[in-house]
Every structure is written in structure tokens, then in C-alpha cells.
Image 1: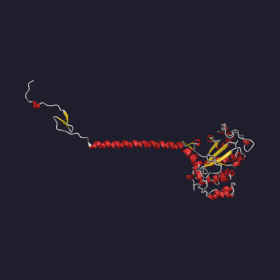
Image 2 (image 1 turned 120 degrees about the vertical axis):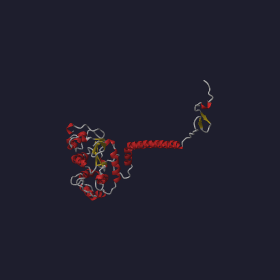
Image 3 (image 1 turned 180 degrees about the vertical axis):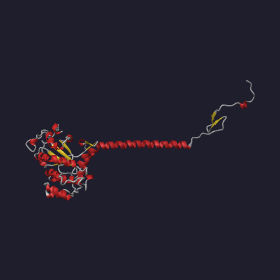
Image 4 (image 1 turned 45 degrees about the vertical axis):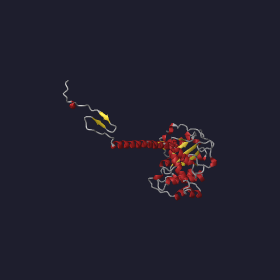
Length: 318
């Protein structure tokens, strides 16, 4: 093809040339593309946010992990705190139980029965009215070793911390005249004395003292029983009891402790399976391996002894 001699009119391709300072393109106005300050700032901000997010994740994982660990070990810590009490009731068991018998009367061949109650608990009062006389006969004949566990988890519903004060009185009586503790408890649940959210009674220390004396407690012990000696015991024993998974039952969709609770030879007895509360007394006698006619006979011991498991409950009581 002929050359028209107009070479300057030929369009040249864009060719980039790097002069180590700027980038130029033939055929275009020189353009410069330095790194934007805003872009650097955005990268810096994103990096900070990423670090903060990572730290937060680590913190959340640590908190959740500790909360889980704390929940799993709460029962063990509460148990240890109970053992470390500086003012313990006399002959208190490792689980915080108060003996209802004198130290020399412990029967190593008899089963242990642990009764967990709150003195403000109406269900505890109902159970006491159908079971206490049988427990007393068994305990007096040394056919069982009976321990009381007074708790105060209903304290917030009472006036003047009644649950705590009443449990403290029980602990004091157990420490000085333990054989009077069951009689005192029976008196506490009497209809004409027990306060409730319905009757609004406000029981004073003087009334607790007078009731203890009527139940057979000496005046000297009864007068000193309301001095708060065992308040710390009540708090720590209750805390441990409420965390004991072996005492948990299903209550309105929750799996937790509820009073009253009965344990026989260290295992919770599921008496709530019974349809009629009045069957609790004969059923307890049956599951420890004793005939009804032998209740109160110190010559006849329950067949499960001090370490055996409770017998299956007879169908007639279910």
C-alpha cells in the first residue's frame, strides 16, 4: 500500500512506560495513581475491628467455659464450705444433718433416715402430720437413726426471716438436747402455731422459745436457742442441699430440690409416687423391711440394715 507521507496521523497503541516515578501512557494525558490515604485508613480500621472481634470471641468462650465449670463444681464447693464452718452443730453429719438422738444412742445396725424440711413449708407440715408419730416410734426404739435437715429456701416468703430463725433454733436444740428435736419439729407444724402466707402470722423469738419449752426443751436451752448461733450453718447447709443433684425432683418442669424430701441410707426415697399422702407412713415401714406390728419394738431391726437399699414399694401404697 502506498505511503501517503502522513505518518503523524497513524494512531499509536497505548504503551506503558515506567520511569520509576509515575506511569505514562502514549496517546493520553499523563495520569498518576498513588495509594489513597482513605483506603489505607479503611484497611487499618478493618484490621482493628477484626482484632477486637477475635478478642471478644475468646472472652465469650472463656466466660461461657468458666460458667459451665463453675456450675459443674458448685456442689463440691458448697460441700467444702459446709465442712469449713467454724460454728457447727454438735454431731452434724457431713451433709449437714442434725441427729435427733443422743450421741451414745446411735445404732450402727439401723438404717438412716434423713428428713429435709423448711419450717415454713406447708407440704412439710402435711407430711409431718401423717409421718411424725411413726418416725418417733422408730427413732425411740432405735430402729432408725433419724436426722433432720432444716433449710431456709422459703425465707424470702416469710416475715422476719422465719425459716432461718426456726432452723437455727432446731440446730441449737440438736446440739444440746437432740432427743427433743423431733418433738419440737412436731410442735412447729401444729395448725395453731405454724405461720403461712395465708394467715400472715409473725412469729417472734419469744414465741419460738415458749414453744420449745412446751415441747420438752429445757428453759435454759430454749432461751438461748434464738441467739443466732447457727445462722451461718443454716445458710451453708441450705446452699449445699439445694445444689445436691441426688436430691433433685421434677417440679413444674424444673429439675431441682424441693421440700419435703426423705432419704433412706443416703438415697432419696421417691415417696411422691404415691397417690395418697396417708400411705407414706406404712409405706416407709414396709420399704425399710419392717412389719407394721414391729414398729417401736427395739428387738426387731429393719431388714435393710444400715447399708441396704430400700425395698420396692408395695402396690397397695402406689
